[in-house]
Length: 97
Image (cartoon, rainbow, N blue to C red; front, side, top):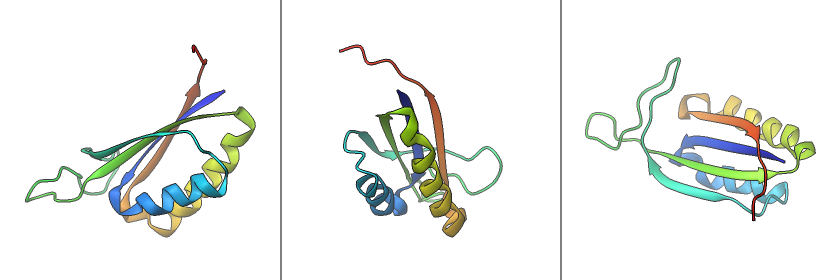
């Protein structure tokens, strides 16, 4: 199993959820209104007067063979909306309960 942690501009929420639905990835946890700043470029998303945009984050645990398809869809979305901000991080997961 793999954990996929996705952070993105809140403007992309419906598109991210559409990707998860399209790939039949049902289980996830979403954090609305998280703040952040990209590592390379782009504007901070801090919900302030100066930086009014906000991010959201989703974490999901999927079978290893499903990760490549998810990342492919996310990369395609990022290519179309690069200035919005979208990142995905993948690591090992063990189900405890």
